[in-house]
Image 1: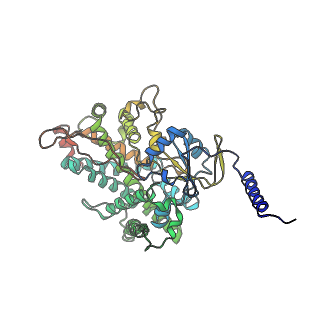
Image 2: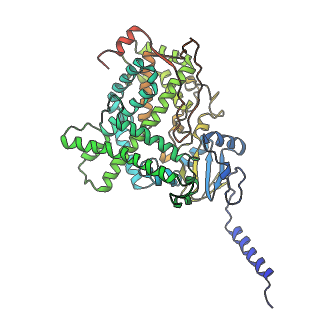
Image 3: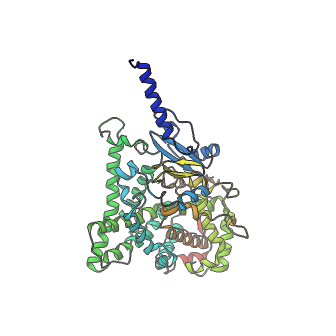
Length: 503
């Protein structure tokens, strides 16, 4: 008896259903917005300030939200509790990075610690970081550098308050380049600082979840450059050139200094001087780990310190309390220093609040799961891109009372709120290895600035107070948008200290 077309069609359909049934996941995917055929959640993906959209999804679907675009599964975590359970406790399978086709592959950031795949090179980078700035004892060797550069920062701010943003960038670059390459920057328009600023801005844009469509649809990387809509290829070429100039210039500088016997202690000079064969692979790791340190440290610290000044303008009562504590411990005849830190609980709490109130990396840098997992009853497929909504975690009303208010006292007393440093620097084996340096830089800047300066709202030409609003930029690294303020010396005695030969 001949088989009809209908019988054949039914048989094929039955095999398809059987295959789907046999290969169905052992648990459901986490909930999320409804997906459409083929494009799935493409139209749902935000193109700017992704953390706000992810927060709305969290309010609707829960702390784990699942979306997919052309087969790339993404998991958004809106709770620090869930992030710790997955990325810390299961770090062996949640520590890889996704292939970021614009930022990582086309622009070249895959050579840096931020995007290097989990493996031997990743472990070597982190080892170099840890040996240099990974602990309080290691970091203490660079405290004199931090204090020297920050004293100069305060002097420049008081001489030219309107150049605050530029002064913050210059000082952050000066500190990190001293540590990574033993390089003293020029007073104005230093080429290495300018390269780092430009490259990190490009990193932020090229790796943002909604920044470039090629990050979501990898097949677009094969579209020829001349094809309409493929302008990202020319952008990537330009940005890759910037990145390589940023890595090569300081590295060559250290090699020249070593050859002449004038190199200062730094991560690069120490590693290049070790009695170890300098293979091409080892030199690659030294160059790019140092580039990772100064590119990553410069821009993130800039964001935190600039947000500190904004917070002092918007919440002047916290400035007054910190100044009172500094006056009682330090006085007005010397600069605060790292040795004072143990006796400055309110100032330390203020630093913690700076890092909580403004999330420098609102959505972190994505992780990738390397094998199927079931978590809290939900199926997480291998290859899922895991995005941590750090902004939400630091503004979670379940964790922080009145989270949009800048309030250092939340970390003091008998029942302090959770330490934001456990969240703002990332999770698991991908936690930021420069966190000790970052916190130290923010602390000494806050202490020295508050001991010597008053930060207030400024007035316009007609004497009216200029209103200040907190807004932040889009990107993997987010900054407060520029604002105006008044920065003045607290007293004539303090001004003498600032202008003394100590600086």
